[in-house]
Length: 393
Image (cartoon, rainbow, N blue to C red; front, side):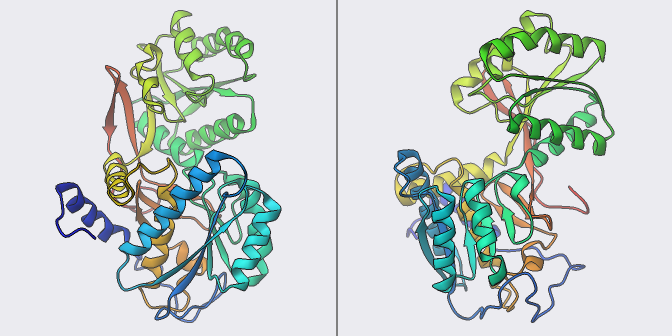
């Protein structure tokens, strides 16, 4: 730690205190000695945590990501008080078979819990390999289709974003929802998440249009999207596309073809502020999308930069979250701190991107902010919640 704290360091010092504190719901005690769904540990001893990263794949991007995940995890371990984490890092080469071998070796080496891998297929292979060994897996994936059993995902899910946005839209009187989605698997899963969230928010889905993810497919879908919005008298148009895919084209062509953002609210399931240049696109001005708590994210980025002299990878903070959550649970001094029951306690944890909690089905719920783009700048229009209250927020 540095001898003199800057104002940013003071902010992060406060956040570190939150990150290392777990809020346990009074109605959900974890009984001492229960080991179902996880290992029994000795909280007074260093806890062996295996970190599985895609290092060794030959892909420079994987190596960069691996480096950021490891640094984030070590930063979290150094920030913990009263808990010792024995972090052991294993490369998977981004390969399911090698990930499985690494996981088995980690458990043989004494790992009590596994952080990672990143990719869904590898995470699934790892969870299957260690399921009968009483070890839980906290993957960095956001693919909810792999979650369940001893496999939990830490990445922000379509369900979290869709639920947050549909609730906010309903509060603003936008309850007639049209959906336009990529025809690939992510697009289909995104559309399903929007439909599910619409049902729970009291909104009505008035139409759904899918399109082939190609220039011809996207351009050809614009008249169909316009017809859907008009015929269904939609007041919100949800788009699953991201800035690296169909979103720039849709953002340009829809207003040109008469689907005016002034009459129907554009809402994105992906982030519209990444890369920053996307915020200059005229068609994205005024659109709504969800994102992690910017204050928490900026504080973590600042802390990471001061420690390592560079910015963290976009999902690097997930490794910090995982280690911090493990440390918070172990600090309670219970032998069952890393069981499924403990990991899924309802009050959740404070993470680098805001409050989050793991759910019994292996997915997660994250407290997200709602933002818009105004004059080419990111503007938060509804802050992220600071805690969970009852069911949801």
